[in-house]
Length: 460
Image (cartoon, rainbow, N blue to C red; front, top):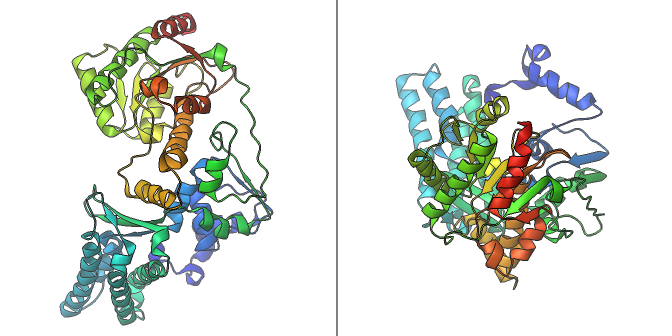
């Protein structure tokens, strides 16, 4: 347990794998870390050594990592180690009861914070500042009571971390932060994240290295970096370059925007349509099909359609019924299956060659307008006199659509078809912008795509 770690004072420090890894990292000429470790290592621990160059791959996701690493979370579960330490300690029953009561009071205060949440889970930070100060005061006094008791050092550290986080929250500018409660848990979780983390990235990340390179297949919308510059806080003086793909998308793939789609708000009919396309391509290809959904609800509706009209011999690999890694492992070993996936399958999935030949997307992946963070970002733009749809919703959807469609063609020899089941890509005024953000697929009908897949299926 990191909270009970004695660090350099531990008599076994010379045999500790953690400290051995840290020492190797300090001596390494090239160090590979994920986004969260990069950011937390810079702000809270001496984990990232000095370096001349920083290369950030998949940089389109850096702002989300910044919101996670540079933001704050509060939950009753943060006090689990305090309860455990007290229960396991060698104290009289009376002393244990007194300490546990203090922990319960603190847990109750954290739980009370979540009761301030509005209908969508949003909380005004300014409304809870007095409560946060009370939590910090109680955590501080509780810690002072046990700080010299060695067997409760882990509990003491937890209380110190809690106090530090809460006090940090009381010192930020409330209008620049979004607080909301996630209620789909056994215990509600309060998240407080920066509305626009770009300035924090400038302060904590870019200023820490002489040279920084941000790279991603989805940093630019078309040839424009305006949106990613805003999200990531990229300095004006930075150089920008777009390197176009060597793939011949017009020869290797077909994009289908069907003519006979149901209305977009009829979720069950869209799910039925998605299953019918997936069923036809999987029957033709022997599986090798993935369907991407913009919500769990739509995916579950498609599962219902699949149950009513199953495809014999082709199993469904459904996100939620098994974890992402297991689904991908199974599919790579035997692609005679159909993957049904949501958010995490839109990026970071590499199924080259004959593994994936058909990709179905149920709708344009706009951000959820009901999410408190989306609402906070929309309000911030509108307060600046900007149109939130143009400056947030549309570029977010364009980047997400580029990520999703990018799952299909992964090499110069891959082939396949993409079916996007959203009639707005033919009728909306912004359709051209979204289509321009995707790879330059050849556009064709459902029949043309099925014929193309049939021709390509001869090598399967």
